[in-house]
Length: 91
Image (cartoon, rainbow, N blue to C red; front, side):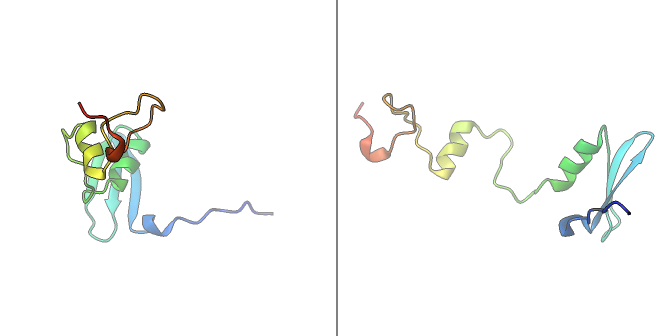
């Protein structure tokens, strides 16, 4: 009986990862562009999965990111959860 070989997920069909003596590379099969070298296979996969269209901005603080998605900066002292703006105490 042959062992079942898992299929490659569709999102990876357009990329290939290769290992060379100087590190790991990933290649976009559609364009032929090669990216690397990366010290490990994990780093190559992380770079391949990176989405340049994300809202993350280098240098952005946690507070700025929380404000952007609507998380309150006031912590309710009774529950330890982010407080709601309507229940925020007056300073």
